[in-house]
Image (cartoon, rainbow, N blue to C red; front, top):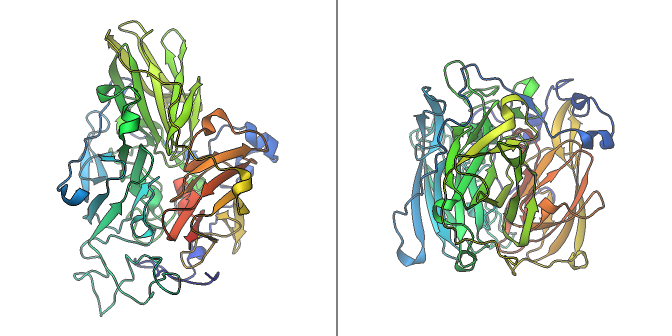
Length: 558
């Protein structure tokens, strides 16, 4: 595939022009500064800084005290059909209001009217089809983060689900104009590499996403992935969980049932009217992408939500609990610890990573988690007295953002769960010598057309450009280097971390991952096998503001 093959149409919304990378020209001046905003000039000094890449919004409404609101558990979505060995679901994306802060109504963009969206539970190897209907005022895209998915259902940023009346729909046509939306670039079957004719027209009010789920059991999540507007769409509520299970994992005896808790952690801020505050240049999210100048490095909120509730509390038995933790924040990093009221730390026993179970458990006293990372943890409350409290704290926060949530031990109880010494034997054993290629990829700010942008390899994202081409089945080593904190996410392929800064991986790097946190000035080596499907995929920074402002690249599997 040549460097200049297109294979994708231009985006189907107003005010956009060819030369898409130009939209990432940012008049940042000293506001971004990147090295300047830290006040440091060396990688060594940068590495000592806490990962606070971004600026914090301050809420304009009174905030509740911590640990008063009960922890909500997202509802589990029921399939509309299960015939033919496929579970079929339907999801409507629509506006709704919810009481996030007590006594305050907050408008949201939602999946099925709830935030977070409903959880989908599925079995390994049993395909799922989800039909999404868009009743929001703008186009959307759905990406199953961590899914091993054919390219046509991966949620490429220009594969749009259009709302009724949008230019390009039957009701939105004007003067015979047809929007070039909803076309996926590669099928893997065409003699020219599977690229569809970019002149073809396809518009969709609904889209069926098919997920084979032929992958290790794990916690995935789904979210909007529309080009230029991923960050504000997630901020407004377009995120939900998808759990994959199998018999082998269930036979391990890990905590289950009501002692297994999904925890989606996300920060937000609220304006004076109770709406979610976000510094978008175009609050309608229709035409002009980007955020106001102070927030170009990332948007942070001053309210920590867990499953959509501010600093919640959850009653537990004096027993082990399995915590399925996702950092769904746009830009905020956390360093989690579980602390009793008398100052004692409980172990966070990691049993899984982004892509499923570890080979063996790893105990942590504190655990950093970057945007889009997931950790599967077991916490044992059996030594906490009834009535005692365990706070989940954020060592990287300040003020109210130092708290995340709390558990209150309500009762003694029998506990038949366990954490086996061996968790999984099916982790890949790739070695550096197996790699057919080593690539160097930089994630840095850079100058473009007289301004600043967030760039991969010195270039901002352009859907019409091929950036990296790999052969189906090949194993490669990628060496990633960053200027500031960048959580790097790879679509389709899980990977192992080989090294950090030329040294062994950190304990938290264990297992198979799809998102890795790069620290300032740090080089990280990962190894991956690109199997499963041909097509066009992505890799990008999952600081959502960085992603929207250029830090994304095309990965073509041929």
